[in-house]
Image 1 (cartoon, rainbow, N blue to C red):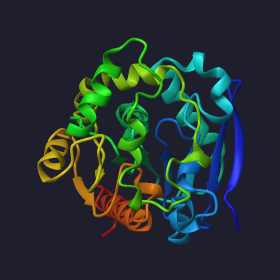
Image 2: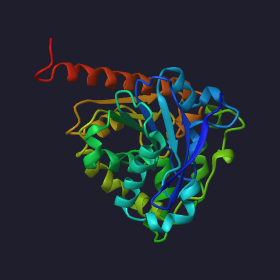
Image 3: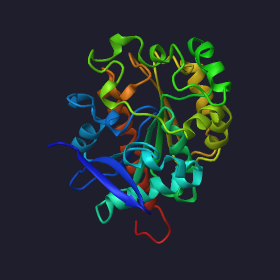
Length: 298
């Protein structure tokens, strides 16, 4: 069985996505890819073992990987999606249209990678975000890795920022031994990035802490052991965890033998299993909370 490619219309804007449905889902996982990619990041062609969609479905979760605003079918409308509010509304409406009357189990959990974490956090702090099961953030951070400072520093200060500064490919894909040979570079999932992402990237260091402090759902945060865009290690993970002051639960993890692109590396299966285990815990916590509400029979 293959993942189903879908396009839905949201107020005149076509939004594309990949979907794999569990018959009676424990929950729905909404996956948000990073920059210069599309939803195929979570279901890499001819690499089923790396697929979040396939692993999630096998474990009883429906998985929806949308092409974020300005990617895929919505790319021609990128100029209309420059505002944060428009992008958040589009994401929520896309999920509603894709799922329609389909079962959602305990609810929706948002998993995001790299610059896709900005949309995930915006969705979480929106009024509608109070109903989310939780969020997973990966491939992002608060401070750039020493290897990235010189490469990204000048680019992020430039307006407009250059599309791809020299050296960025190595930051994203080295050490290459962490990925299947045919996956290095991500040619089969590459996509032009919308212009608004330059603004997101330049402001992220300030925006991340501000948004994190407003998140009121459980958070799982992951970095690869060999992440080279963002600082990693125990102190970096503790620093990130400290930002989520309103969250009822924060878990952090450093993925052994992982690089920046955790969902298409050789350890993708291990990474996905950890995150889906956290989703399952969120499902159980919600069920327990429902049992403890006033008026429920003991």
